[in-house]
Length: 391
View 1: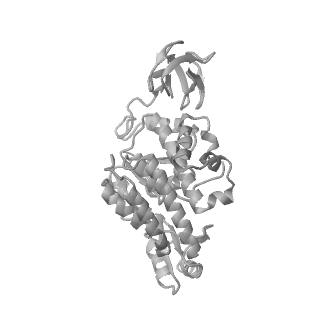
View 2: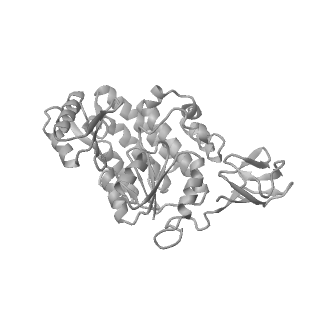
View 3: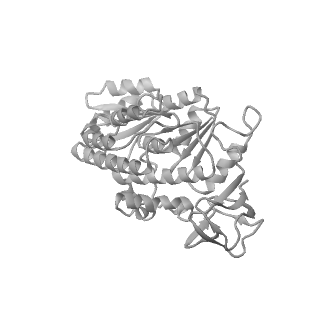
């Protein structure tokens, strides 16, 4: 069973859109910029690390990058049987499941990031990662402190994040070390996310959620709040609001996915943090982070590997993972690129020709088997233009 996971705030990196500029999925950036009325290309390409770390920018850039990667993977025909997102990543998972449109997802993430940024200015908080200590002991460390501090993320075995007031986090960090923590790492954030400190953000987020069209999901999405699968749009309306001030139960989510039969866990988006957590938690599953076009070939290679049943087809995967079609982006007359023919080695973004004013680009690596459209042929949107072997 293939599972898609989506990262949250903190996975962003300055210039993380550069790898995708020449990929057909980059068109989502133009669409997103139009929806929100701001230059999101600049956000993904030119915004410095400090500005990108700001809560609203971090969430929007991470969400958009994850959706670019999702679009690229969908072009390969790979489909998941389940999905989950870490914090902000739940919004990406909802779009992937068909429960939320891309446009509504953008508006919700924008509203969420703006509301959470405002909440951090009204009440300053911080977070720290506690390493090498059991969940129960971290909870004890927080409970013994007089200042406000809570567990915010149950990430993986021996990795728990705490959050609260600076005094509370400092006291709980010291207590955790006394209880045997190997290391406590302060996090470069200005808010105590997934704690009651985020309560001021609830009204604005609630209003945005109520304005969105949350539909029945086409596949189960595992929620941060209870680590259980949900498909109902009305359920998710409540879960997204509750998630804001509740801990992320990621370790429990991974365990439940494993119990449900997850054999391949693919992280879509920047960073690769969730992939590391999955490796530590689901030791019997194959894992991969897809964050650049080069990773698309690795994904196809992973899915082509023999499974426990003796073949390489996993539930949720397109059967013909090694042969792909490049399709027309528009209606018009096709003109092939000079020098491109059978046996030509393609890279992501390679131009195969034009349909009117629109370039036809390959979304992935591969060897061109044959052109399926000839010069001067009038083609329709999504009509196959070229046939290639991607492995």
